[in-house]
Amino acid sequence: MNGLNGSAFEVSYSAAVRARLKETILKSKKGNKLIASLRKIHSRLKNEARFFGEPIFTLPTSKVQIRVGVSGTLAVQYGVLLEKPIVLVQRFTELTGAETS
Image (cartoon, rainbow, N blue to C red; front, top):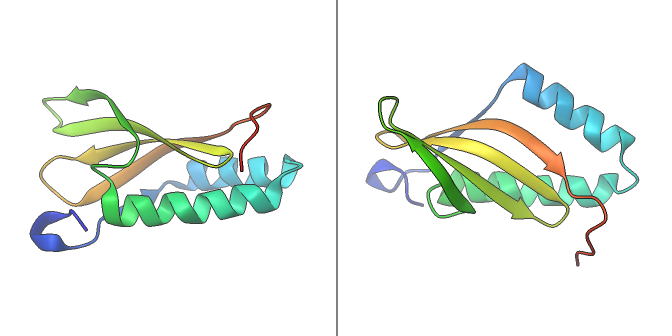
């Protein structure tokens, strides 16, 4: 865990993000794979948010680093606060056409 004082990160999903994710899973032909990928992503965000994926840019005034991570057939874009162990999930994207194991 890499939150402050070794604590886990608080992961926040807005109602809009949850609704879009649910719609994506229901429409997908790979719903079970997406759910498995989501579980892995959530675990990584909870425990390794500052190391999961790649940093895209930092908002210095807001003290938020925007990152993108991928697990299986699902990508996530999220912000991690630099001074608090908080993750703000912005969006999920299903990776289509990619062969993944």
